[in-house]
Image (cartoon, rainbow, N blue to C red):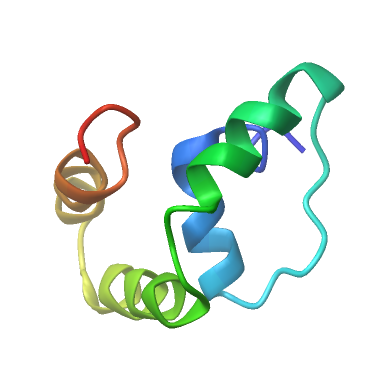
Length: 72
C-alpha cells in the first residue's frame, strides 16, 4: 500500500505486472496523474531496466533520473 501510494514508483509496479494498486484516498489523484504520463510499454521498460541493475545505488540513481516527481 505505501509503495503504491508513492506516485513515482507506480510505473515500476505496473511494469512488474501489478494490476491493483492500494493506497490512501488522498494519494489517488496524484498517483493517477503521474501514471498517466506513461504507456504500459514504458512501464515495462522501467521495470526491466531496474531489474537489470545490481545495486541499490543504481536503482536509486535510475529513480532520481527517470521517476522522481518533478524530475520529468
